[in-house]
Amino acid sequence: MDLKKLENLAYLARLEMNQEQLEKTAPNINAILDWVAKLQELETDNVEPLYSTAVHALPRRADHPDATSYRKEILSNAPETDNHQAFFTVPTVVE
Amino acid sequence: MRYTIDGKNGKWEVVMGLEVHCQVNSASKLFSSSPTAFGAEPNTQVSYVDAAMPGMLPVINDWVVKQAIRTGLGLNAKINKVSRFARKNYFYPDLPQGYQISQSDQPIVGEGVVEVKTEDGGKRAIRIERLHLEQDAGKSMHDQDPHKTYVDLNRSGTPLMEIVSYPDITSPDEAAAYFKKIQTLVRYLGTSDGNMEEGSMRADVNVSVRPVGSDELRPRAEIKNMNSLRFIRQAIAYEAQRQVDLYDAGESPVQETRLFNPKTGETKSMRSKENAADYRYFPCPDLLPLILDDAEIEAIRKDLPELPDAKRDRFIAEYGVSEDDAITLSNDKDVAHYFETAVGREKQRDGKMVSNWILSELFGHLNKENRSITESPISAENLGDLVDLIAENVISGKIAKTVFEDMLKTNRSPKKIVEEKGLRQITDSGAIEKAIDKILSGAPDKVAEYKSGKVALIGWFVGQVMQATQGRANPGEVNKLLKEKLGE
Image 1 (cartoon, rainbow over the protein chains, first blue to last red):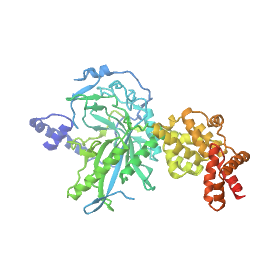
Image 2 (cartoon, rainbow over the protein chains, first blue to last red):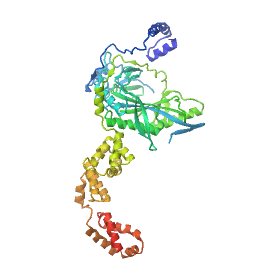
Image 3 (tube, rainbow over the protein chains, first blue to last red):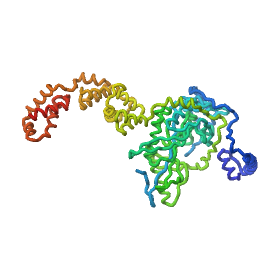
Image 4 (cartoon, one colour):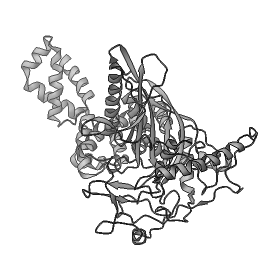
């Protein structure tokens, strides 16, 4: 993991990191990667990938709608809303 | 006929794959109980799960799972008994989670195939790569305020089926036909309303070009969020030409996401997306594997309706209608139902005749009024009765059109109209003879001309008799009697 890759990763995660932080973090990340690389030495050709230690299948719910509006509660956490308190508002996103 | 583009150094062909997104017709969302109804007040259908409040956990909607299986079976596809959910990570204001829950390497439905009819009447099999379930994002509105983007999360978490085709599509028309086919299919199955205007169905189109005869796959452009057949055709034609022009200029297209602008008919690159395309998929730790058993899949298979292709073939075999007519009749479930009701289960009227009345007369009227078949002023039963009146020689085909016009306006039964207006065909040869005698005696010169060899005048005589009987005389009978009398 060089600094350039780390910088891109930070961008994808929307983390703002200055040069000093990048330089400090890179060796830590590399240590983690080395450790994972060590794990990869294990022979796993005949082992099914394990995504979860839970053995149950995914529980499902019935298709019953709950028509309660939580708009007030949801918007109360928003940094900014429109004048009618109906929308979240954010700085213009231009495509 | 192959769709090709002439380049400087030879012909190019187009290679396309479609990703069609269909909203599942559920009452509530994929992982929460918020309603999915269209047109609600902004942010009133947003649960804490949809707003991605910390600690909220997704619970999958059983109905949606079943609709995905149902659609997969309709696509002649393999249903995967174990599938998994993954997080597709990206940042956008209308995606509160910061990731979309989707399916990556283990989708619920695997490979399948659908058949589309091409312009030249041929048929092509388009292979399906997969169908997976995923959440829709919310909606961003950029035109409400000059400095702000407004976000409505009502759509956030709405269940989508994404149907991905292999790059088997070779022309803009074929792309449109394929899209229509998927739409017809989901409507038959009832798994999505397929409504493009309300955003329940849209497509991303992957377009690349290559020299005719080659089998390579070159860099492709993904044109996002197409919601009209016309735009799909336009965007593909534009984009394919643009790529050929680039190659001609010694350049090469780059793999990228592009947006179609309906106003200019052009596609343009979405800026700064080269980073964003790195979605860093990983298994969603909030969701266990989705396990299906044979019993569930078979129960759904048993419940499948007759699908459009099967219906089309049956209409041809059972009712003798032409292939084109059979396709039109079977493409829309409601039209197919109307047709079969009008033919009648027991009566088994002449399918061709019923089909002609629906496709020319009734459709002519409905299209003019911009109405669908379910809003037809004439019930299928009444149309069937009208066909009976013609078949039983109670009225002629010509009078039937008059009756039909009346039915459009009054909703009345054709029998009633015929009785009340006295439109019953005159089959009594005595009455017809009387009318003929009157015409003949009134036009001795024409009679003489006919007898001297101008036999084409028979048409004029028939016309006169029909006029004298207000079109109610049986034309066959008139013809026969006239010839007898003039031959005397």
